[in-house]
Length: 462
View 1 (cartoon, rainbow, N blue to C red):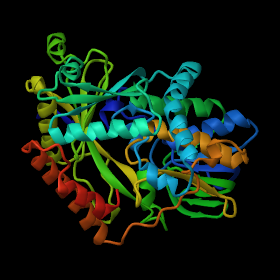
View 2 (cartoon, helix red, strand yellow; view 1 turned 90 degrees about the horizontal axis):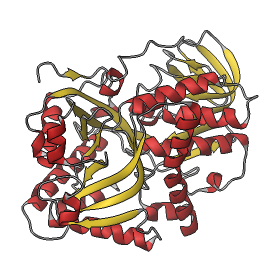
View 3 (cartoon, one colour; view 1 turned 60 degrees about the horizontal axis):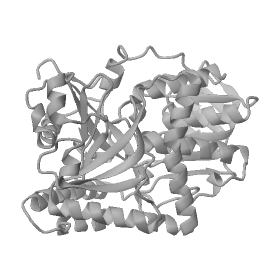
View 4 (cartoon, rainbow, N blue to C red; view 1 turned 90 degrees about the vertical axis):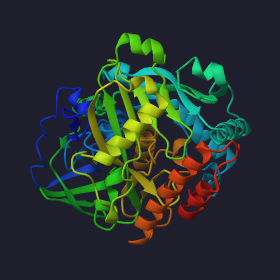
């Protein structure tokens, strides 16, 4: 533990040889057709699809740090194409057919990202596989059954989602006490920093400059003010996800929830024989304070979960450094899910933020009057969702009337979060209730979600 790296953005950059040298900053005042704020997945996908559709467009991407500094270079590498939000909430702004189309487009992002990586020469350790969500209590197993029933009600068949019982689930990955696992087919594992850096290089080759070390200090109709100069633009796309509250005027639009990961040393072959996990599946569980994990290219285990869930005033971390208590909690989750790993060294720990709207549903849109567009609020599902967001933003900017531009997340504007200290109290209260619910369910034989969790969901509108 003493030699473990903490922070330095993420292990994924260490895996690439260290943090990248920043690109040049904005040289001064410029004018372009489209200015994109944020060089993460959302902004880069938008630039990619815009430039592919109309090579004559002048586009500039501005980034406070470097491409991939935020969640795009820190996440768990789940490219899932998953619809992880409330269908009922999207029915408020769309039809059942629209929600079904939304899900279909999301599922298609896995193949689309794989296609572009192959076509553009992006080496991102992408491997198409399954996602296994394990249940280790009767209440968790009941939630998996309810999830499967909902999928069937929405026309999602076994070619996408199926449920494994007991021994069949344990045969995939040896998770002790597993009662079953929900299997989602058609997902992929990626090395996220390789994907975002590779995408940035492709966008540059297409003729889009990325100005790094360029902090945005103001956004107005058709004008972006930075610490390095002013950008006049017909269209402005805000692609700042969990960093959005740091922009003037956006403090309560979304909140930055923290997530953290640890990664082990490479796992010996004999230990993999004990664990199983031979398909490099994405691994999660059905607890309320859920975990997410992947088996990396070189045979490490990256395990993620919630750390300190929210910093007062929508505060952000410093280059990914996380708390000792969070590292200990993640280590405990790793040992709980995979006790075979108790002798392994942890090599790296880090954290980052994800954007959460007040209704916990992702959104994308463009205001034609101001020329300002946005996308985000992915609630931890950004690797694949950002690709669809980029495609949709391109449609909206170009004025293309497509099925994507009419999906029910387009131009959805949830209400703002409460002022402090109410949102700090609400979010921390939610996670305390979830922890109590998990403890209660672990010692109960009832196949029913704890009332603590139901109250937490009500309290925060999940």
